[in-house]
Structure formats: C-alpha cells, structure tokens
Amino acid sequence: MGEQWQNRRATVWWLLVAGIAAALKGYFSAAAASGLEWILRPVSWLLRLVAGWNFQQNELGEWYSLDAGIILVKACAGINFMILSFAGWCWIARPRERSSWRQAAFDWPLLLGSSLVFAWGTTLAVNTLRVLGIVYWQPALEEWLPADEAHRLLGLIIYLTALNLQLLLFDRRRWQRTVLMTCALYAALMLVVPLLTGNATANPSQYFRHFITSMAVLLPLTALAIGRWGDHDREQPS
Image (cartoon, rainbow, N blue to C red; front, side, top):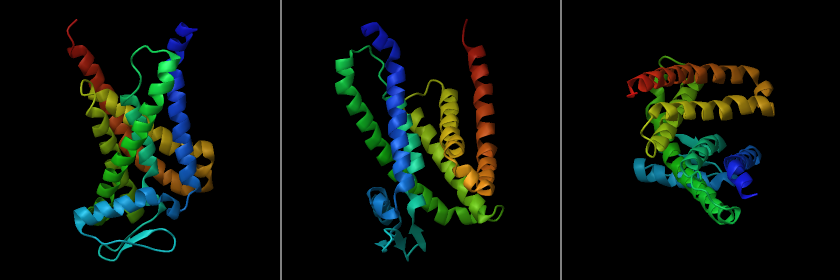
C-alpha cells in the first residue's frame, strides 16, 4: 500500500492543484466585481502608493480613479494570472521527499495554502504593473495595433514575463524548461479551457483574435526554447 502511494503521489498532488485551480476559475466566472474586492482593493492601494492615484468604489464594486482616468473592473482582477501563478508555485513547492499519507495529510494543505497565498501576492504586484502599463505603455502600442489588440498583447507579455521570472527564481539551471512550462500553462488555461467550457464558441471572432495574438507570442518562444534545449544538450560533456 505504501509503495502504491509513493507511485501515485505526483498524480494525487496535481489532481489537487487542478481541482483548486478549477474552483478558482469557477468562482471568478460567477463573481461580480463586488465579490473580488479581496484583490481589486489591494491593487488600488498599490497603485495609490506607486503612482499617487486616488480610487473610489462605485455601486458595482468597481474601483475608479479620476486622477488616472481608469476603472478597475472584474477583468482587472487578474484571476487567470493568479491561477497560472498558483500552478507555478505548486511546481516549486511540489513534494520531492518520500512521505507517508499521514505526513502528506499534514504537509500538503500547508504547501497548497502557501502556494495560494504566494499566488495572490504575486498577482497583486503583476496586476499593478499591468495597470501602469495600460496607462503609460498601451498608447504607444496603439500606434501600430487596434486598442483591444494592444491591450491583449500587453497583458500577454507582462503575464508571461512575470510567470517566467517566478519560476526562474527557483530553477535557473534550465531556462528552456521554464519557458516551455509557462507557454504550456498559458495555452492550456487561455486557449484550451475556453474551448472546453464553450466560451470560445460564444464569441468566436473575439476568441480567434485572442488565439492569433497568443500564438504570435507563444510559438516563437516555444521554438526558441526547444532549439536552445537541443544546443544545451550538445554542450554537455559526454
């Protein structure tokens, strides 16, 4: 029984991670902006600290700033990135030592809970950067792209960069693996999940634009990582 548990430990761990991620995704889909105050309010505080913008909450639970001319709506919560970051922290914190099911019953809730808290903190920082980017950098992108495409591309670049940096802090030996992992996580959550849930077919033109923008960034990164992985292997002494 103990040996079977050791063999199935990784599967059980990632099933738990996937279950928490799915619950978080479902919560976000059903929640209004007022139900996301636990992330929108701290982001407004950080933006006030960093940029000096004052925010007020409206009757819908959204946060608006007359100073910056922006509104933090439901989509600004960045729950999709939080899910990606949570998966990344779970990869970093994944159980590596052989342990009994009793030890796992005590340790794993702590590891999963800590990963969720770290993902929340990471999301606050990255969302703050993303809002700053929308205000200061998106106008430059709109000289070459439509506003919605510039908005989508900016978020994609910031999210992928942040997720890569999160993983690289703890695994610097092979950055190619980190790049491939972040690309795979993003593609799974942002491209595959909408197909499975039917959200993609509800607005096919919007999904198609999102798909093209995402693949324009993901495919070159994936090709670079795979190519450099081969070079890395050839450079290793035999």
